[in-house]
Image 1 (cartoon, rainbow, N blue to C red):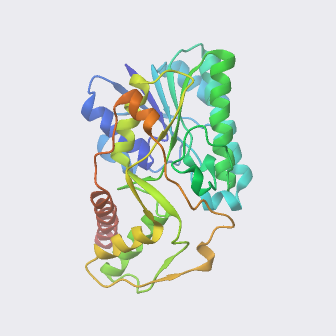
Image 2 (cartoon, one colour):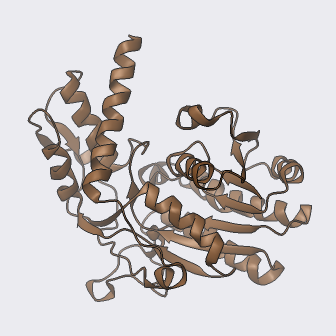
Image 3 (cartoon, rainbow, N blue to C red):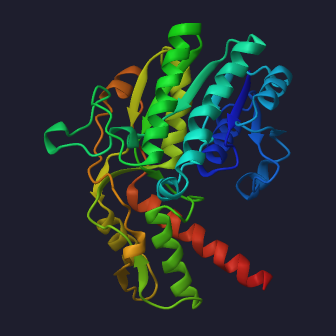
Length: 325
């Protein structure tokens, strides 16, 4: 079996590649990267992965790539995934996520392949839900609260349309917050962990900078997430959509306090108005019963382990930088 992972150099893509290599060693893993993609997350597995240079915004490059690889499964994880950036670069976000996904699906159709395709949408499509809609089901209406959320609605719906119109075997996920080692430091919990590690290392001083702490999130470990993605294409029928999420629900402030408790030094914080989004999604608690019924999946890694691993990841990065200096 051949698997193609778009976004293989990111947090989720790299963990998915490692999961497949460890649990399904007979699978041939291919990854889509751009010429400037950082490869740090997959550096230790470059001898086991076949990388291909292409760009979601360049249809021809995807046609060439798919014609060469001819994958049996595609995990489409690449995206402009930073919500805050989507407010300053809305057109780029929409183009990358919607048009890029359309290009990928068109390339599959043009080359004449029949892979099973995971389209990674997002819980951000639901936007601001009301308390009576908790836990959030797949049938909940879309109310995206950011250009990123809008882009994921478009990606979600174009995948469904290509299933209906052309019979492409797309399966969509709306993953709720997932984190762990390699999480980009533009995301709240990773930004907290990075700053805490910097205070510990003496390269910055208190207080650390934070944004909105009142939003409610349900956290999953990235390793549980990629295990879910593999099970998705093993067990779930084309055309369907599934919420996936963890079992630990807390405010962003709770996440911060948990990370502070793991620190080796006292940590102070202050709210920076520049980190407050123009509009935010403040209540994200998923109903994952549909996915669990179909696959039997459940989250296994405790949130304390996830946050410890995230903090240790930033500690190691800072130590590495100091050694290089």
